[in-house]
Image 1 (cartoon, one colour):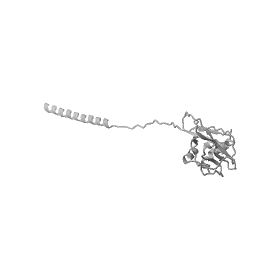
Image 2: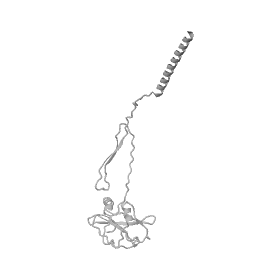
Image 3: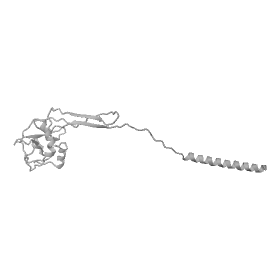
Image 4: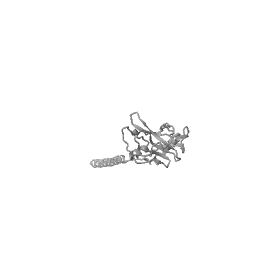
Length: 216
């Protein structure tokens, strides 16, 4: 009788241990697979933004000593303070105007040699043409007869003592010559247009690309 009770107690104990083991295993499995979600409540409300505002109306004609108003400002388009540094850069170049030289029949306009394509590109890009004393410029067959307003440039043999390398026509039968000068290295370059006023000088520069002719 005692043995039967002991066997029954052992069965109950084994059964209880089995149930405990199953519960433990289930709890362990649930611990490894549990998950949760958390919403990130942090947000960045700062918005950086800067733009340039400019108030400027360029004049049709620039005059010597003329004051032109140009207002430039930085505008903060964001929602926080911004540190702005403005840097003014320009490509202005001072030019000294010479005395007006009237075009006349004494300025030879025959036997001119047209510019090459590369020379034309150099002038249109704002560059200079330079020749040496020894460079031979062959006599051409072109006669300069300007009829339109603009800047006319041609090649000429410098050693012939001819000062003119071109001229500016203002469209009203007034012509102003371009002279050649020697550089420090001995080369010869074409000077600026010798016009009575800086206004005409700037107009000549601006119209060169549109009205430039080799020598016609």
